[in-house]
Length: 106
Length: 106
DNA sequence: AAACTATACTTCGTGATATGATGTATTACA
DNA sequence: TGTAATACATCATATCACGAAGTATAGTTT
Image (tube, rainbow over all chains, first blue to last red; front, side):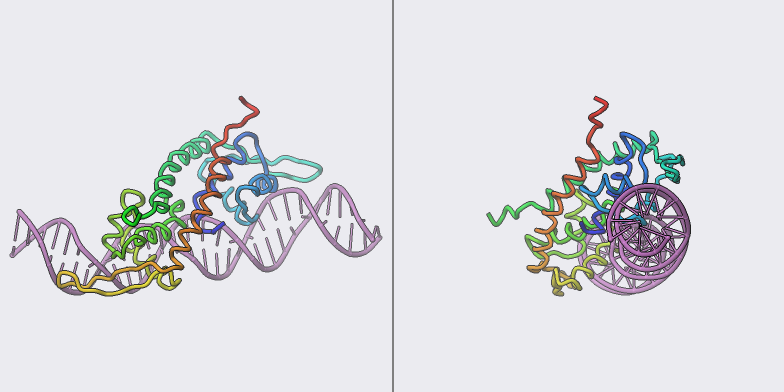
C-alpha cells in the first residue's frame, strides 16, 4: 500500500493490535501483517509516539531469558480508536466523491 | 480531518475534482470543501506535483480580464483514480481490523 | 562447535508532503 | 475609498514512514 495513504492509519492500527491484550513489538508486526505492513523502525517510532501521547503504557518483562517490552492500551488509546471510527465516515464520503461517475455523461 | 489521514487522499481528490471538466485552483478548493478541506498553498503544491507526474495538463486562459490556469486530467490521472479504488479495498480491510470487537470478550 | 535463522529492540539520516505565513495582483461591491 | 473575493506563488517548518545499520540472545541446522 502507498506510504502516504498509510499515514493516519498506522497509529490506530497499532492501538487496535494491542487492544484485546497486551502485546510486544515483534508480535504486533506479525498480527498487523495481513492488513497493513510496517517495518520495525516504523513500529518502534510509533510506539514511542503513542506512549508520549499517553495512549499506551509500557512494561518490561522477562520471557525465555530475554527482556520484552509489553504495551498496554490506555483509556485515551481506546478513545483514539473510537475517534477513528468517526473519521471513517468522512473517509466514506471522500471515497464517494472520488469514485462517483460523472452523471452528466451517462 | 486529521492531517495525516489526508495524505494519500488529497492527490486523488484533486484529480476527481477535475475529472468531469477542466477546473482551476479556486474552484477546486470550493468543490472539494464539503468533502475535504485544503489550503491554497497545499493545492498548488499538489497541482504542481500532479503535473510533474503527468496526471494532468495545464492551460492558461483569460477570464474576466484575468488569467486563470485550467487543469485537465490525463489518462494517467484517470488511471490513478482507478488505482485508488483498488486501494480502497485494502482500506476497508484495515477498517475492519481496527473496528472489530474482541470476540473473546463477548 | 560453528553457522545460520528467528526473535527483539534501538538509533540515525533521508525524503515526502501538508500547512501557515506572506506576497502579488485584479475584480466586484458597498 | 475601502473591503472582500478571486487567483496564483513561494518559503520555511514540522510530521512521519522507512531503509540501513547496529546490538544481543535463543533456537536450529550442519
